[in-house]
Each structure stands twice: as structure tokens, then as C-alpha cells.
Length: 168
Image 1 (cartoon, rainbow, N blue to C red):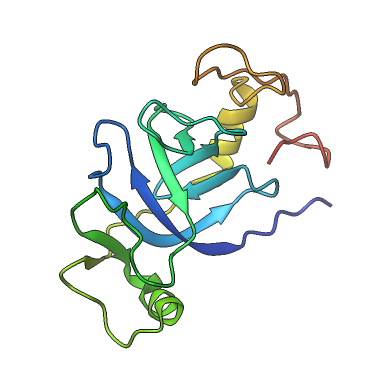
Image 2: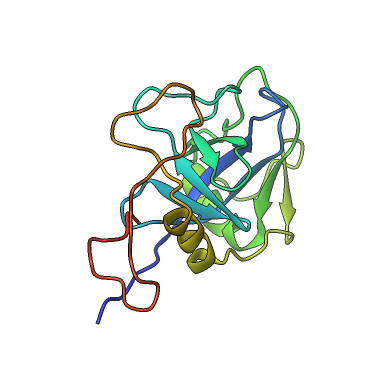
């Protein structure tokens, strides 16, 4: 029987589309796909752009359903996660506060830079996996022109996927 193990990792996530360096930003736990090329966060599936690609807004991930550009990175130990040119408070998932404080070696949050949130929603990972695989979305091995070329030739049975057939 084939099982998927979900590991949650602490990440900094910022919406770049339409916001440059001032977009809404979060520090939260994300679930990563087995390949590591997709992270699941706040109801979204964010696909990593291959190589040196960057979205039009400077992101390194793209929302598989909306095409919005995001910056996703590890949390900085100095607590300076937002781009130096950016502004606005970073929302920190309530469940991630302890892990974040441990990472930056602090006892309390700097409330001038961040705010705790309980508004992050659970992600339906299985639904997003079906969207990515059944609609042919995904990055090809040989990129076609344009930063948002979604083409993947993957076929599988939703009822009985074989290991290695899913790109996740």
C-alpha cells in the first residue's frame, strides 16, 4: 500500500503579485510534497519555479490555481524575513509562534513587525494533487516560452496511483 508522509516545516511566505515587496506575508507551517517542488499553505498549492525562473513579480513559487506569484523561504534567524524594501506586519500562525521564537532565539514577538493570526485555513492537499495531475498543470522538463507555461504529461488512476506516477 502506498502512503504519503506529511512533514510540516516553518516557512516565510509572501504574496508578490500586485504588491512588490509590500504584499501580505506569513510565517507558518507548510506541508511539502514528496518531491519538494510544491508547498501547501493556507488552502493553496504553491509550485516552485524551476531554475532561475522568477514570476513577473519576483516570486519563486506560483499558485497552481490562480497563477499568483509568491516568495517562499526558510525563516531567517535574525528575524528580518521581509525584504529590506518591504513594509507591513508579518502574520505568524498561532501554532508556529513557539517554533518561530525558538528559531530566532527570542522570548517574545516584536509586535511592531509581526502579529499572531488564527486565520490560516487547512489545505485540501489531495484535491490540489488531483488538480495538478488531472489538468496537465505543472512545469515541463523543457520550459516553453513564458513564465507561466503549465504543461505536464502525467497520467494516473485516482483510485490506485502507482508509486512514481505522481510528481508529488
